Image (cartoon, rainbow over all chains, first blue to last red; front, side):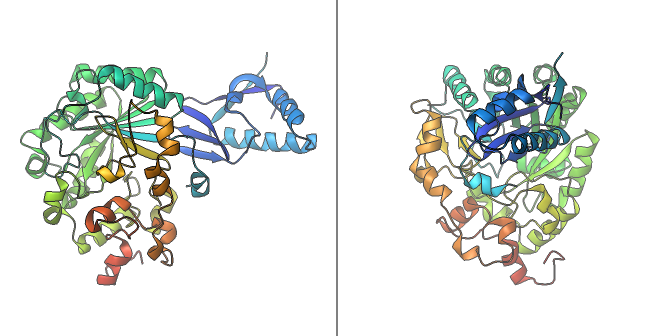
Length: 93
Length: 343
């Protein structure tokens, strides 16, 4: 994960916020992916307007968790979602 | 399937079955809706647009469109176009008889899936169930849709008549670059009258279970998990999603747990008089359905695979909720213990 990347949903993928975290829907299938991320991510993050670094900063202001832990968790999730073809990273020019 | 997250309660359905009209130009002997003539009180175009708005606002991902025959509505393609503008996926179940080149052109959108109904792989086997000439028209529709590269499947209701046709239907679907989807026959609508005549025997149900485990590319969409084997576990169909992941809107705006539970006692609310989100979150019918437990199944070794099966089948055959699906594999196996490798 590059901190200066933004992330957008892959073609055919939608996402919405649920109490457990995020629910992804991919009409190309497999249809559903449940991400138990609690309030770590807002679905709007995947609009591509906020970088991963910005997101980590936002989480740090909301929680007193160690920054390293937050960075690891965010990286883990973004890598997982990319590997499942649900999101794409794009570098900020 | 992440059942634990579903059980926490979703903010909205994942998909909604929407029967957009009772009107149909066929009279299939197993029709769950007893469709035929358009009925008074069906939602107007404006009301339908409001339905789409309200579900889109809740981020419902997908409409499963049925009827009746959806293309009997003069405004149907406009409604679908509106849903697509909102980014909603539409899975349209049709008998195919009204689909021509122009309709296929207008449906050519990556957010569209089409299920064309066929209950036999030839006119001789299909038309006695669905009506004279229906096979050839449906196959023409498949060709038009295939030409446009629209995502399409053949949908077959499993009955004693269609069961021997399944292999040929898989091949027919393949000819159109499509897959076969098998739906469960339920004793609702005209299916009440034809149930005893058309429903599979236990022997056939066991054979079908084996057939399914050997045909993993065949989809079953709705609630065959009561007879699904371990082989299909990875496909994720292991529980009834009614009121948890899905629900049904009737042509007149009534909201029910699913398309097969539309008796008055299951009426959860009415659109557009009530807000869909209020119905989803606050309806006592939905609340009680979400708490439904098939207690007598919980000690069964197959419980994780089926969670008691389809409540609608149990209700229609036994007139009570909370009872096990009577077509459960364990029940079948109890009768014929040596027939299935799946046990």
